Image (cartoon, rainbow, N blue to C red):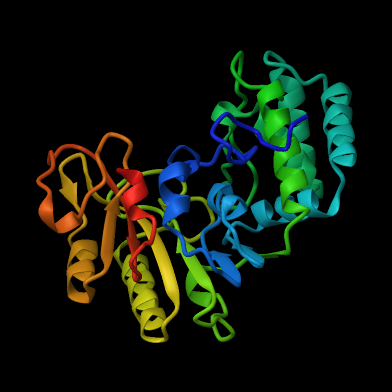
Length: 302
């Protein structure tokens, strides 16, 4: 198999993570600094951005413990060992696109034993290949009947992801963003943030899944944190949405204007341009990348 998992030339995560940035990588990655010591992916999710960035070291952080455990398993096991486990589980539980009972049996085993690789097998056969836990931290995403399975595309992405991440100097941490230790972060490092979006909705930010939700308090904490990092000269980039279905993130836009940060519109439906000079459809989704530095390759997006 090729190390490159797509025609775009970027590694695609084997995890189908809501809000993943894979389709926007060609717009986002060129805007990052060319010299980075430690790249911190503060809300790593599917790791699509961090694994494709260029740095000397990578820190992948997320507050979902079981996701981090899975990435550690990917990093500490060979592809051959991982695929052997997957194939064994498929065989032992008769997993298919129609065997709901086999899926539920494996789900019960995972919620008891917590083998990280079992979580990946479950994701492969779950509805929309998604991760979802209840308030008891039990994986509860339903079966993806006649839709989901461990398919060749997922296998190809897994191979590329595992082989790439094992070649990098990586560290995996599990904490809420406001508990992350930034004490050793310097001007040579870089922070990338892709938090839940305040004005959109999703199961990952409703606060009803046993993990921290996302609201005005969390948005304010993050923006204050980035402001503090800015005073220390630490470079950052924040993915977010300014406008969505008639709603506007006024907290975010005020913060941008007060700090005179750079805003690049990365939504594929728009031409990239300066935030302060364009008039946009108020019903459209306006996804942006906000930086506290002037991207050197911004013109490459036009």
